[in-house]
Image 1: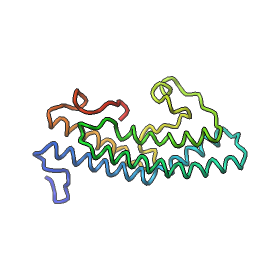
Image 2: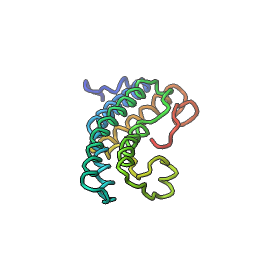
Image 3: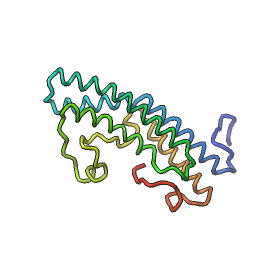
Image 4: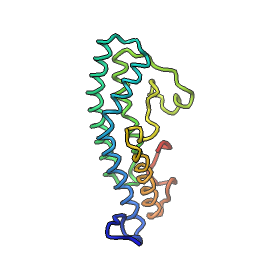
Length: 184
């Protein structure tokens, strides 16, 4: 039985329930990028630079400094892109939150390239699925931002979107659902 704290909408209104799930997931994902996006970019640059091991100490320090700046820029960019996505009607959304969060790799890749770190050999699937991820750093789940609950937030958002689209009669995952990516 729903309590006073239940903010998932009217049980007789599936679209309102779906929108509430989407809003909750969206809020948590934006907060996760805000809290963890910069740190993720910095950590991935450190990991790749140190695994390569060929940078002089001055060059390593410069790359890590660049990673801090790039991480802040990446987090700001992805937060803004997520906000734009979440403001759209679900049927008009042409990307998924994970697709946008995965783009944090853009700034990390720029730092690694500028530092002269060579591209890595990736397996066939990763190469095909993420052709621009030349360092093999793509996030596979938003939980990699440092918050295990972000996977659940993404799932809640996706379930909410499906519920909204089904309530409208368009079905989820079918024509007119507004999605284009299989990489939720």
